[in-house]
Length: 68
Image (cartoon, rainbow, N blue to C red; front, top):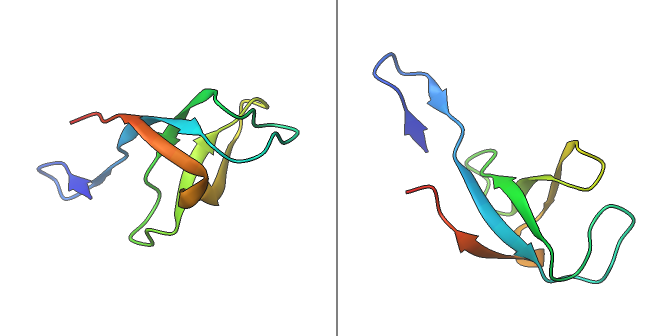
């Protein structure tokens, strides 16, 4: 996790490819904006086709671009 000099949490944005089965708001092979949402490494915050950010299991995605 990253924090600014004032100790405030900085949201880290990365790109990840969905590798699960097609879903209403996710398509296999498409790349989405993804956020690490907590110390819990099981989930990622994903901005899906609806335009909203939802928590999805990390194993459904392959990281393709880190912010770092």
